[in-house]
Length: 108
Image (tube, rainbow, N blue to C red):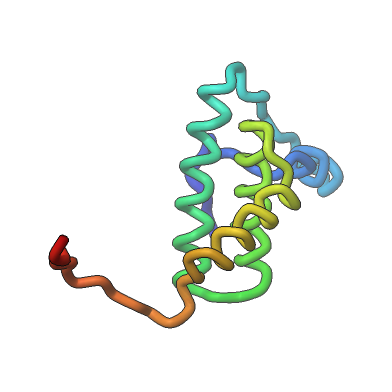
């Protein structure tokens, strides 16, 4: 698999590349905006990979990008999962494929 570079990678990838005898060129995002944009690009990449090849590994990659994105905005994964559970209790999830076509106003 050839990758289009530069791109956001997991934090230990430069270390792993060095450990394999190669020399990576890399830098750290210089602003919150840059890091956020890179995470937006990465979640799109990982989501498409999951859609093309659903697997536990691809799902884990999606979750890791989301964890980083949530963290940048001050939310921990447990906090987000609790909020998701609360919303699911109130409104349901997306498991049944319900498609809303229209809403007609009721009589007062």
